[in-house]
Image 1: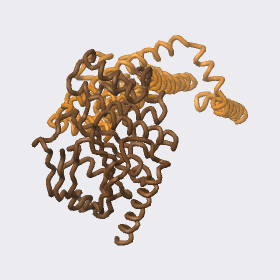
Image 2: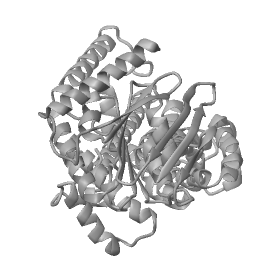
Image 3: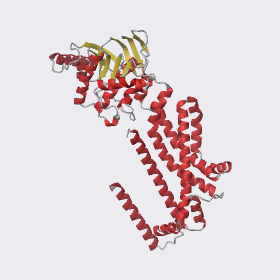
Image 4: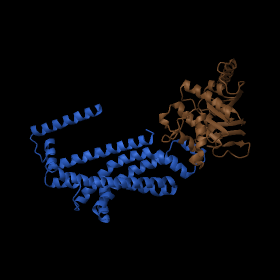
Length: 247
Length: 251
């Protein structure tokens, strides 16, 4: 659905954030961009979202035009909710920005909040919610427009282990049920191995794709005790070390 | 309450030392009155001073309201249009750096009506903080939220009303608090300038009048009232700001 060819991005001041990125995104992909900080993962995500433009190379969407508002969902590391608005109002925001009246949006809001397990928290303000729940609201907000692509920038990095595990499982369930393509930025090998079907290893300065590893594991189950999961983590770790040795 | 105990005790101690020093050194009232003489001067004519305080406060609050409305309107105009920003910004700074005593006589001559001219003078001083803070708040919403609005194709107007304006509220409240104190300063300075021109009502006029008559304890009493008013305005606007943020739910 999206083909990136030889994409490069250089920031004003000369820092080369990305070099020669070529990558294909398919319908119902779950792709992890894995790498240390400074490897351009977030920059790549912003390019895909259209929040930033490449200096070289092209992004080609299969239907010929860039996705319109609401066709891409974006989840940041921080929940980035409007602090003065309730959970329901925060989830309503993307629809509101497209001019959908509140009444007409209500079913979508209710459904999105239910999907992330927040039924009954419609009126809660962000400060009344835990970090994990705020992230759930953020995910519901990204899902409310039924996006074709969901971009997630280290969304669980700031959460505690238990909450993170819970949300990872729920995200797998959402991915299985909704058929959305997910691009997930992370610096955790375990998280990438646990969630993604395709793990794209990136190296820093400049950000480049080192290699891509396909996960043999399938379809959103908890595979943490599966020997194949351990083997996958080992493979990714090995590839990472090799890349760092070369650099 | 514990936090109020120490400063109160310290203040009382300072008053006792002050009174003691004045008595022991036989300093006459017209040089430095003790606290008891100052309270005495207030009690001798509480109404005269309180009415003057009321007059000064009326100017202060009128000026604060005008400064807030003007400041927000100007900041909004700047946020809505780059042309307005380029046109307004330098004049706002001119207004800020002009010393009030230098232009107060002109304002008083031009405006004519005593109350209005005092309010205009105080607005000149009180305008800048509420304006500049609101403008800063409008110009700097959280970057990721701004990205989100861009991602969903939000236009200028929707971004302004749904993101930048609400995100500027805490900045506005901080500016309002600073402007509150300055409105009082502006009102008093304007009264000093105007007082010699003949409107006799505010606390500044009482201070000058008492000074001419060498009623130094009365001068001090007026001064104390002025300080108290400043403290109350500052604390009141602080509490107001916290209440607004609590009411909105983000604090």
